[in-house]
Amino acid sequence: MRSDFRLGPARVYRLRGGLCLVLLLAVGFAVSRPGIDNPWFWDDLHLVRPYSLGEIAQTWHGPWDPDGVETPGYRPLQTLSHAARFALLGESPAANRYLTVASIAVAFALFALAFQRLGVPLTVTTAAGVIAFSAKDMAYTYAWVSDSYHALQGIAFAVTLVGLFAAARAGPRRAALLWTSVAGWAVTLLLKDQAVVLLPVLLAAVLYARILGAPTRSYPEGYAALARRARFECAGLRRQRHLAIYVAAITAMTVVELVVRRVFVPEAEAPALDWGALHSVLRELKYTIALGGQEHLGAYVALAGAAVIVVLVAPGFAQARPAVTRLWLLATFAAFGTISSALFALIVSRSDLVFFPLWFYALFLCAAVAIVLRLVWPLRRLRAVSLAVLVLLSVLSGLASVRGGSAIQHSMGPRSELTLTFDYDFVYGRYARAATIPSRRAEMVKRVLRGVQVPGPVMGNDVRSPLLGRGLGSYPDVVRRDPNGFFSDDGH
Image 1 (cartoon, rainbow, N blue to C red):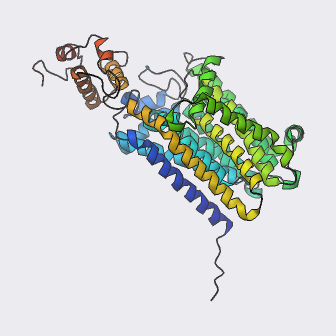
Image 2 (image 1 turned 180 degrees about the vertical axis):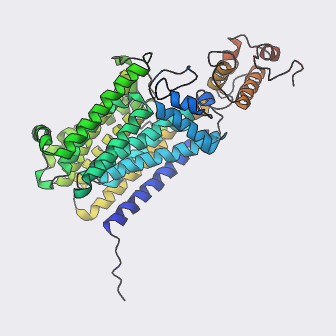
Image 3 (image 1 turned 90 degrees about the vertical axis):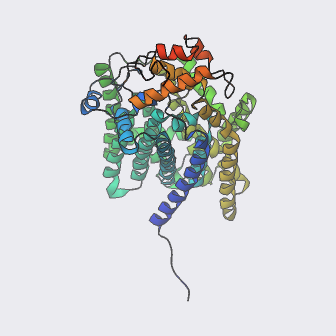
């Protein structure tokens, strides 16, 4: 007897999202395995801990770090997330890292589902997630527990896009979805104040949703047509009451965030045009696809240049091909997102703040490859083949690039030079006054003790050098300078 069983659109949407999440989880657990069992590292030692209600309340009208040793900023939800982590998982760095990996996978899966709402093939955005997950600098997010807020911020911003893109075709539920997007944006800002640089991306996403939410026959074909359509949509916002309120709300929230930061945390770092830091972020993107984990500047320039050329010439091949036009619009949006999110570096001079630039850049590369594959295999029956090839390429590039992330995780290991240097800072140096759990401080002293007893290099580094430079050349030096009395004079 013939069966008429069919999955409805909603079930297909959830099934595809589930498969995307499973693939991202598998990639995440594979790339994070070298550092899962590392001890707490640097900021983890005093940030991931129990907090009093008074400390949590203080972060809403003052700096986010109650100890006052971290870079000042207005990030109340970041401190709350650290407290929640400790309450949930306690003294287990490994469990915290597994949670972070799962959070990154959820963020990338939500990004994929958001763009699927506008007709972008899920395989393109899933491939971007695989590439970004396996990039070298993503290791900072999943190996450094206190940097896990990037994953939570990714989830919040993904929810922002899901609500916005779903509202483009939602009809009566449009208002509720837009307010969900507003809530996601609020959480994004409160996790880290530098997220204000994502406002241009979000405003561009409004136009992107309006263009792709319209019938395919009205898609712009070419950059001049895209510019005219963008001007038309901006002028028409006044007639779209829900969207006008939405744009006003997210813009006002961003301005309020900057004002509150200035009032409550006047010592916070002021935005500055640090072009050197911006250059360092863009330079780090060459590790997105780093064969063997090594720096290949020529390959980076060739790959990025080829992708740019494909996107620039794509409109000439997109006439009467809405699928190619959709991918071209995706690549254009991803390029803008890469540049805009890289402006993090204009506010905080750190090249490891590349969570969003990495994902947008990976999305740009995957969109360019998908354009080529769609032009090479235009027949409908070959589309699945072309998209499967794209996912396979992303997995292979991820495997080739994972060595760089593994090196970062090893540098955070219990016997690395970096770990011992920061252990010293927590026991004797500028972090000594931070609120650290006594058992952790005892472990740090023990690692410092083992460090001065190591006869030679460990994992390519002379772990004694940072300790010898600080006057710790022997076990008696460690005992004599231990301000907390974890070791007695008889060595026990």
